[in-house]
Figure 1 (cartoon, one colour):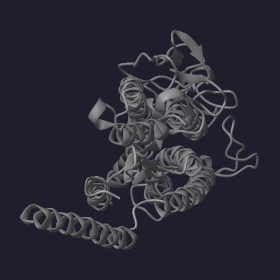
Figure 2 (cartoon, helix red, strand yellow):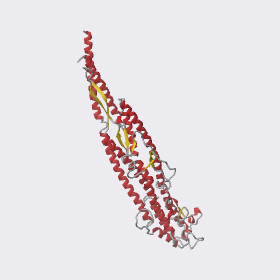
Figure 3 (cartoon, helix red, strand yellow):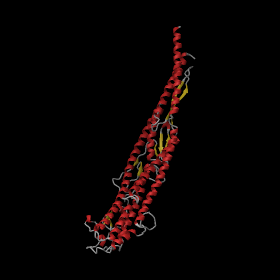
Figure 4 (cartoon, helix red, strand yellow):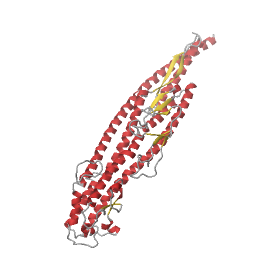
Length: 484
């Protein structure tokens, strides 16, 4: 081999070593960077006349597409489970348990105790006042819980709008990155950094809507949902949604008072089999707004209806006519079964017994419709009110069980229902988190190993040193020839 051939070989080796060192340095610098795919340099022998050497073919980005796809589906499942679990946890905290002073169950017990206390000394105005105050506190508990449920629906509505905006923006970003990656591949440039960025963006999409990547030419990808809906190919689809400014208990997707979801202007299912968003955070938000919160409101309204009807039943208060409002009213009027939706948020204490509304405390003892005070020692009505509160009845609506029970028992049924739902969602979240962690661990196994990269760097250093020594030797030979 000639001196010039040997020099060309050594120079190609130095170039390859330099590129390889850059690749290893990039790997080590980005060991904790989200979306980074480990790089390997691809080399091949070259022939240039009678000379040999090594040629850098390109840079290979190593990512297990199968594991990445499974990890993304696990991300979607985890976001879905966490959203549902957070809803039940917040509702359960609002309703409370019997041992919590401000819970509905505790307020019912306090009302019963105050009625018993008033009946033992019906002539004592302070005990009548305590019973009215306890009734007002129970009303406030129902109202606050109803408001909290509707607030959670409104939060879900706002998050749906934000998620859809983020989704549309991310799809446009993937499309732009696709174009840039395709152009880089066609021109023979390294597109690894662009692919890293695209992986991060697609990961964000996967939390909102489950997606799968479909390879296209020149390193580009298409995105589709597990049910086969293509959301990005030549161009991204556009998700549509119209946010409501306020949400009331009677407003639902079914009656058209809340917006659904559209893709390119076509309405699509927001949950259930066949939905293009089923399984991700967006589907869970629709579940909260249209299913979970609506059911929680329904059960709360059923309990509030039972409370109203217990004190509004005919014959309980002889001073009232049939159809008159009892101790608890629907916004000041008698309750009608046709207006049950949202009754828990409209409950009020009858103004006839509330001094702050111009009423008189003695009417709690003598009758809501009484015009003058009766015998101060007569506890007949107070005992009847207590019996009505503790009477075993079957709920007229809701799904808290078919058995009969007093109001406290039905309230316990609501607490139990929420507790079981919270436990089930927590278990689902735990499983989803374990699944996501396992796939993430599998993905990282094919990522950057700092020990292996350090060993590669030592080998590259040795290769660089050998080629540098070759050039030094060739230089000495040429200097010797020139001196001759």
